[in-house]
Length: 554
Image 1 (spheres, rainbow, N blue to C red):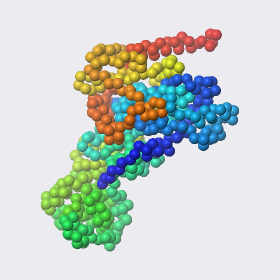
Image 2: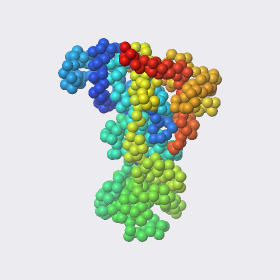
Image 3: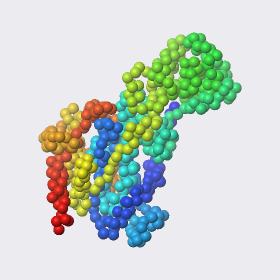
Image 4: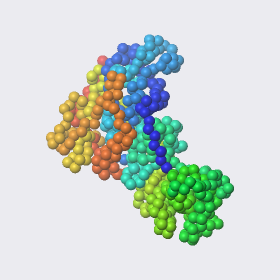
């Protein structure tokens, strides 16, 4: 069922250069960059930060993903002659030709990226990334960075919710490539659903690029393409016992089919010969990896009987069949019936391998149906999820934004009539406060120049979105979430492997209190401003109100 393939960082970086060139951005980034350049402001030091305003799917958390892609994008960011010539053709004719020379020499050698570690549980309004550098350059990076983080974080978070719904025991297979929003969406989904908690993918290219275990056997079309046993070729199989003489596998299986029908009181005439031929042909091709889809016709009257006969024949020859896939109907009830038959065969025919056969369930699985699956008695070992996972049907976008917070060393703030769209000014650092039980209880957003909070020392902070203006807390532990990951054109914090990031996700989720992980009506996690940052916000808001009529008054 599985194959595993590694990949190199070079392959990944080449993929990023091809998928996310500098022109993959919005037109207004270039018009703003030109205006900065004309005004002589393009080299002014500026700071932008990336965050989202609401936790996705009505839940209590998100996962941060896409950081390594952002690092690779920054490292390879530069315009080609062809890029510049295209920009020359689409920007207004009055654009100064020297601007295009400026673009041709542009790179990210003066850009610094500070970030939350990839795979970290994060919350609304917390800065995930801080991008510092010359104003024109960091402005040009906006759309591409948002594109790399938005969907990766969303689908990773969706996968984590499916994992929470499924529980830790069941294996999860991502199989959404054919339903994804294009090839890039399919690759991104396969990569980040694995990080979010899925064990396997059906996407072979994702296995090649990212080293994700790949799985897959047969579709209904394979089964229905056969009509009779004459189509099976070759018809023999060599036993694993060491006897080199080929065995007539069709005759052996027909004998087992008769015995299975007698055991179960089934009618042999209702068994589909074409389905049996398909199973035989596949088992002869892959005797060590025989897993069949058994609902092409009737699970109870044909599919299960045919599988059992072929699997018993394989066992007699020393092979170990893998299991079955169910793709329609009541998966829970059918899985119980299938397991019952497997146990009967194991006991009656003394074939212990039948006790370890797996049952895979696939049938338009959603988060809700996954949760319901856990509430019902069933024997499903692996669940395959496609459409609802990769398309994030409950919420199509995370809504990350990229906002200016400082320019020329001065804090900048967007003050909106909609308070939700107002930003928090200044360069910042984020600290996660942990209680005596080792569970995070508050993320504290501070100005970068402030000393860090200390374990065991009370502090006053101002929770966002709360009626009470301030609160006093005493952390048992304090963790700084911000790390420098890119500077002077180089990746300064080596990325973790997919397996390491995946493990980090699970550890990060395990430390989070269950009330914040509930799939429905979770308790909101607290994000708060430090006293100094809160005072800065208040000061800028008052200053804006006092100077709002400056032009009219003069």
